Length: 204
Image (cartoon, rainbow, N blue to C red):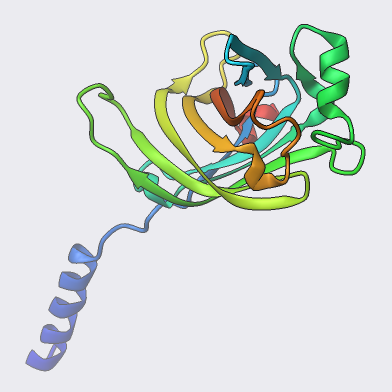
């Protein structure tokens, strides 16, 4: 074998040894509607907060464990699942003067950016998830503070799972929901407690 051939082989071996392994693609996780909850609250006349939940939630998390900021999430909330412990109030809030659920039956969210956050109070993965929420046909920016609770195998279902909690707030007037602002607060705060199951595991 000629010296030139030896040099080419050596170069190929060196490239093969130093080439970084292929980066894993983000993996899809589906939100588990039975274990995902959104709790919201809004001021009522300055006396107290009205508190409610959403019970019909679906969505997908594309989780990149190696590069979390490359992850993404989409979610859809059915307004038919709005609950506040008073049927009359639920019907009013879903009605035409408030959320107009007949014309706009869902609230939608999609992330546009994930920024990692370091905090002593958050020993695991924490991030600010910036995105866009669409409510009553109006889209506006929305940011969530997100903390990873746990990533691993659920001991009951034996499925690969990811658990998160998140908090956020928005002005309902930004989405065209301006009924009774003043007596009823414009600021809406919420907490999300979410469980997502790896897509392939859900089909097993």
